[in-house]
Image (tube, rainbow, N blue to C red; front, side):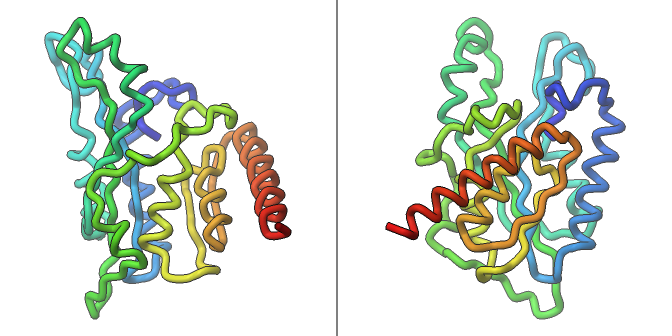
Length: 223
């Protein structure tokens, strides 16, 4: 959840959102084995109407501030920070910054948290991919056919799995499953996917995506 006024965020308060995200970090930390990773994608927040702090004009609240607090309080170490440069957003946001000096929100943050373990061993399955600080230049636009209002491209979870997952058969968890894009990525990489989603409509859409994905991969294997 981004706390940017999406349909599924109707009626949310900052206090409620903070409680939700702090709980997400705590529970993810509890579930992870020591030495394993949690990858979080988030964008900065638009402070319109003084919902974050009092300001004379619409402004920005850097979401890194609360995410750092939530993650560290849960016990994580922040292992790496990267930027997702959203190519598709430049056209959509251009009309805003043409007339006013505002943030175009054409980038988001990808943070990797690590649950500590005694031996301090770090893991990287693909060092070449891990060394990229800016991601998204070769990513597709999020699939709008899934009818989800906050979709991200499948390349995002594919990147995370290829860098931080050790071997096929491992479990990849998405606590905010949406239309199950992360499960599609898990299937493509031979991992077991597990997702949590409250909206049945998105679950149905995601399951249809997975069925289509399996058919396509089956046809490719036959060829």
